[in-house]
Amino acid sequence: MAGFRDVYWWSADGLRLHARDYPGPAGDASPPLLCLPGLTRNVRDFEPLVAALDGRRRVLAVEFRGRGESGYAKDPMTYVPLTYAQDVVALLTQESVERVVAVGTSLGGIVTMLLAGMLPGRIAGALLNDIGPAIEPGGLARIRGYVGKPSNYPTWLHAARGLQESNADAYPGWTIERWLAMAKRLYRLNSAGRIVLDYDMRIAEPFRLPGGEAGPDLWRALAALGEAPVVVARGERSDILSEATAIRMTETLPRAERVTVPGVGHAPLLDEPVLLPAIDRLLAATAEPAR
Image (cartoon, rainbow, N blue to C red; front, side, top):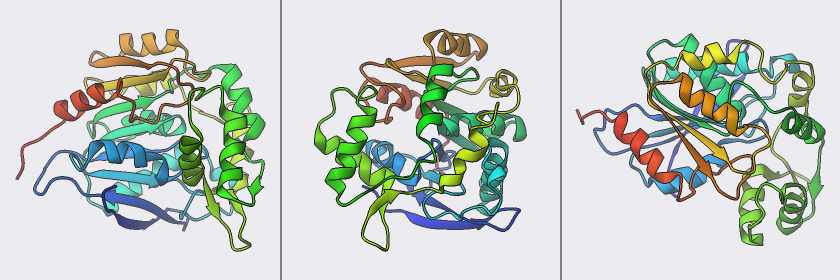
């Protein structure tokens, strides 16, 4: 795993937020990958992708407010995609990053689409991971059923078994070693020595409201990606992104390609062999010569 620099910045409402900055090749002028995680995830969610990239591109992995080392909001109604997008803009401003290749998993993909409209011309490319402008009702119901419900375990192995029991449909072929690795990305050790989820349980409050998972017309937001190269990744077993929606996304965007990850639900880890060639093409399409 490549080394990284911890980055901290302040939101407009006074929250101290966190990201990881993994360096790319020396002198590379290509836009960095801006990695935006799913609803209950954090910067560790992109460790498999970072390992697969092996230092070929700078990566900025964001921790949304209420997750990981980012501050917890006083007002839970700020746990919404538009606020997350505004927080990301503040990060890009602080770090003087003009253009990015956005990699958005689930919620992070919604934020990616919003950023395309907020930052015209600054999204050089995108990977939308198992998310689209239309979200399947069954998947939303499943997520609403578990988000914001605290859980704790005495050991990492217990946490891994708990994840396996609740997510076996999404990753049916996984070994206990893979579940253990995911547990260490999703959970943290608290001061009492228990293994607990690494997010503010109140992120669920706006999400449970009608429309709380998105907000504006996301088809219009998707179209704002324009001529940028886009990879639409979908887990074959996904209950969030339907194949019909993924096809419509590639029909909407002139430079989009669709990749289905077999045997996986919501969401691919982004290091799957079937997906890596598409990521390589995205990197090539957004590369710029070294300065």
